[in-house]
Image (tube, rainbow, N blue to C red):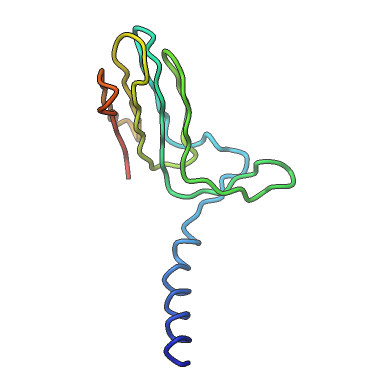
Length: 127
C-alpha cells in the first residue's frame, strides 16, 4: 500500500509542472507567432500547427477551453497567428498546380520551407 501511495504522489508531482505550464490567453487566441502559407499557383493545402498548451475563452460559459494545436485547410495564400510565442507548423500540398510554403516569424527571425510533393510536407518551428 505504501508503494502505491508513493507512486501516486510521484505521478502527481511529475505532472503538476505540465499543468502549470499552460498559459491562459483569454480571448486573444491570435497573439503569438505569425504564420503564412504561400501557394503562388493556387495549390490546395492542409496546415497543422502545434504549440505549448494554452487555455482560452471559447464562450462566456467555457472560459478555460484547452488547445495545443490548430488544423486548417485552404487554397492559395493564407495568414494567421498562433496563440503562443512558440510552435511548429507543417503544411502538406493536397492538390492543384505549383508548390506550397510555410513561414513562421519570431523576434525578427524567419523560418520558411516549401514543397511541391504531396508525400513530403514542409515543416518549420520555434520551440
